[in-house]
Amino acid sequence: MAKRVKFQRLAEMQPTMTHFAAVALIVSKSSPNIFYDKMSGTERGCLTLTIRDSPNHLTNCKLWGQRACVDEYAAMLQIGHVVDIVGAKVMTIPKVPPGERRYQPQATLPCALVVNEGSGYVVRHDGNDSDGRMKYLAQLLHHPVQPLGAVLKLSDVRLGLGNPEQMVPAHVNLLVVVATVRPVRRIKRKLTQEALQCLEVIVFDASYPEGMLLSIWQPDWIRRAQQWEPRGTVLHLVDVRVSYSDFHRCPVLAHSNCTLICEQPQAAGEDCRLLLAFAATVPPQSFDGSAQAELDNLPAASSIQAQMTVRQLYSRAEGELQEASAIQFTAVLFGMVTKFDLDGLACHVNRKCTVCLRLIPKNREDCAGEACQMEFVLGSNGPRYTSHFNINIHLTDQTGTLIETRLAGGPAERILGIRAEDFEQLAEGDKSQLKWRFLLKYFEARLLVKKPAGMRKNLVVVVVDMQTIPLETLVEKLAIF
Image (cartoon, rainbow, N blue to C red; front, side):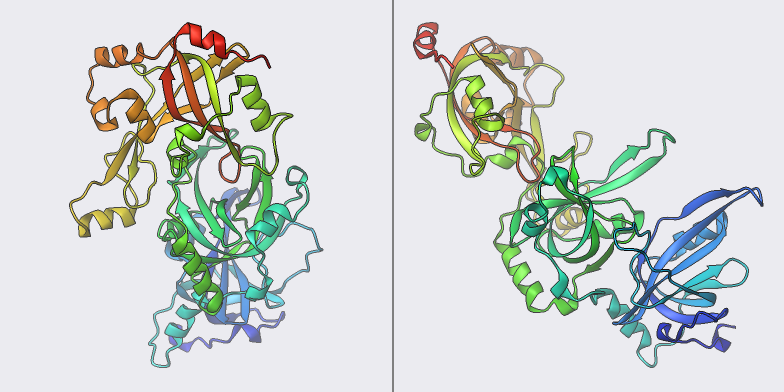
């Protein structure tokens, strides 16, 4: 039956056609939209495929039918598949006024396809490839859908759109490299309690190596993103949404209904090579926001001389005394340790994968990443993770309490006099004794303070060194704000 179908090119579509057939490559796919049909009393649905059959021709194909039919399509058809579209109706694409929200990727053709259950169908293409058609179409997956000359720099996106907090959501084109892929999170909707998956990817370019967050909610793209290689996968993002996040307190990116992603764009050429070359010079980062991410290049304790109170420290970090040009500063704080919960229920030792540098959840033995698992299987018998202290302590003086302080990494091991691996083996009584060596005692603490910036939405205060001092010395050092 399939052999008797006359396939045409997408460029040959005309609005009057009712039984159009084409062979095309799926370059993107929406999540199924299921709804209750009052007329039939059944559940129906719609699935949108974005397809192309040449470098210049791209359009959308909507599949309509009963829920079972749409669910079957969603399970069977994946991004990267070459498919036969048979019995489709050709529809003129209405023009969307500038500024109006778009619910599907922008086509390069004036027409789109509609396949209704019972009058048309879509199947995987299984014809012979004597003319190289299958190979040609598969290569289109890495061909940019829009000119790379239209891309913006991440620094332009962050700083060139006016006041970030008053930013109007917009859609932009970017050429970026993947910095890290975070574990999938499960989020429940408040009204329906439906569980959704969200994957957060950090991307960067030469203009902004600190990275921006890209949120992905579509299951198909989540699966593909989990295979992206940190500092090795280049993405051409088309119509990716940029908006200000109240949670992260900075601009973020999001994969929306109209977004297209081209992985490892072949046409990027020199731009792609230069971006990968730059990425190779950027040290691997966890982007996890914990104190371990701030322990590289700590200043020498002896170089920290500026004495501050807690109130002064907060004012300089987030208040009226802050300097916009300075992202960090150091301070000497004299005060009492008023929180040091070593023998409580909180986790004080983090484990980080030696391959991807991501934090490993407490309920797992090692990293769940497929690439990391493969590395462990094929690689040496070296350690799969490293352990680090990450202890929250509170320091209090006459002006207030500093609650963001972290005692972490090598400084924590030196101050506590014990390695992180050995601390986990201590009995509860020994942990309690260690706690009371510090709790409610007076200390001279030398601190590195990092302001909220980039993917770090919170103030970070890292202990560089701590030494006990007698009460008499504390009284001499008290400063009036």
